[in-house]
Image (cartoon, rainbow, N blue to C red; front, side, top):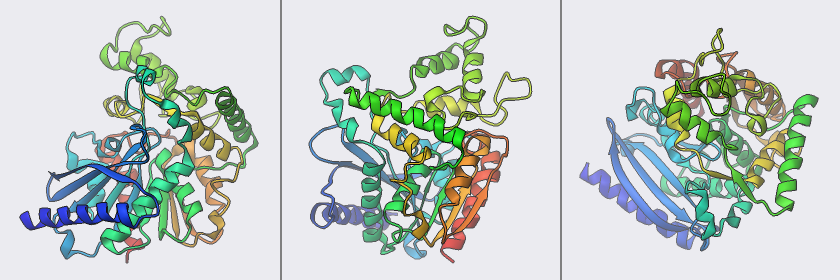
Length: 400
């Protein structure tokens, strides 16, 4: 193991030197850690600074097998979910790291690299002394630059120039935009979300949100509360589930959040379709059919507190028909997998899939009646069935 740590330290020094001297994007390495994780995994996490604003940072995490130097490297570039930290992919219903999404992929033989969204996790009042206007520059274009930088690091470290790229929900949307920008830099793409629609009702729904976000930007409001005040209600549902909800005295704190997350369109501006829901309800409408509440509560701790209006606008405008981030998808010739999404994402996945005119595209929607979170924030055994195993089987084919 000592030799492995030495090798990884040398890799770190090499990557830092590459970023400083050779990369066309002059990011600075400001922090790095190496840890042993679970059975036979090593994680290498680095933090990168862009410019001088202390908020303009993001992290890259590499998860690799102890015996990585004796196996052919099969790099996988995961894009973190929109406005969520790296820890999102380390979640597991069992509480064991080796059962997390990222560890499962690494233990299956993939050299996993995760690039984080630029994210604000501090108290919003910190904007009294921090220059939070930098968030106005955050969006799919800047994410694409960070993703391309990560791909360059992968190439430098592994000599594989065209890794597989993909992500869950907003991470998948960012991966689609990255492939659109650099369609020869990736051998394959997977996503659990779509970034385009042909449905007129969905387009109108997103165009209204798109216009609203740009109106806010024009008025000088470059960022907003990431959950529109829902974070307080989520905390109440977690800490005082049986108490009466301040938002609706007719139900408990827990039931109120269940209603919001499972009702079609219940998330308002956070919903990408008029019938979108975050999770499917039980037949009695009093709980989640697939999603585990404790997984959702844990994941909510990894959400940013403020979010860029520009980033939201990019997503809504794209779904509404703006082709800025999808216009060159017809040039991509690698394999494409849309996986999961249920009733919430399936319409967007199917329409986005139609843009890949030269690719071999698969769309697998399971569970068919699920919401956005119902193939990820679920029991470990269900996640293996509907997400992990289909994805791993497809990933193996990309390196055969």
